Image 1 (cartoon, rainbow, N blue to C red):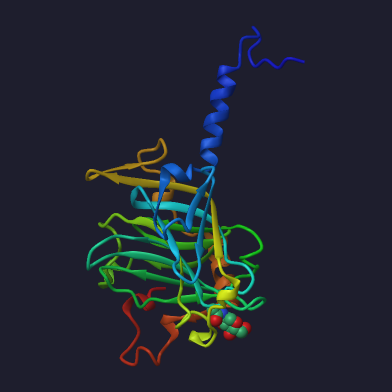
Image 2 (image 1 turned 60 degrees about the horizontal axis):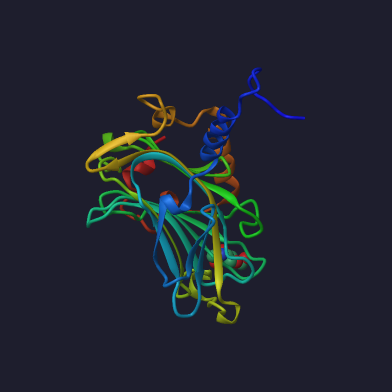
Length: 286
Ligand SMILES: *[C@@H]1O[C@H](CO)[C@@H](O)[C@H](O)[C@H]1NC(C)=O
């Protein structure tokens, strides 16, 4: 049977256009969005829809986005180094340049087979970080792809894993905490050897007999404002897209509490030994 979309039987250009638009929404083409920036061939884009980074004894590898973003809701699916990944770190982050840079960080600290990865997060504003929170995950991040998202808008920065928020960094400028809001950032990712500190604080070293180590990326999606020659243009038809003012609703706040209660293993805001003179001001935000 011949399918026709219009009753006159002369159809399919419209269907083809719909199809193309539909697929382009699903995920962006890695060739258009990213450059492999280091690693001498150890980073690869495959068919435009998969990116892999590898690490061996001589080098790791990394990539960065072609676009610079000024706010956005950015999703990426990652599948981490499987098996014995002790000593390896996979970093995935947004960062601006210069001495007073802003940065929003995910770092995945590898472990021995069967032992849990640590998901380390941090937020830098005006060159100052020291805002670490660490988590275990509620799944094996090496068995399959999972979505790691960053929502960055003028009100807050929200880290989410498979749609569950794990961390919120609120804009606390009103109490004197600088907030990332005027330096465009690029997406960066790298896989490298950090066995001097990554696993059990550096006790467990990288087992190079298991090299090369590989992390994979797919389904990149950015609803974002892209800065180019000093001008920002935001995706979506609305002049002010919903994500730009998105906040955690009640059910998301419940999920955040669930994740923090059950999976958070370090929070700088409760490390009183580290801040004997009192916690940083943003820790007192409700
Ligand atoms: C590795 O496994 C050990 C033992 O379960 C655990 O204490 C540690 O937090 C895990 N993660 C890292 C990155 O060290």
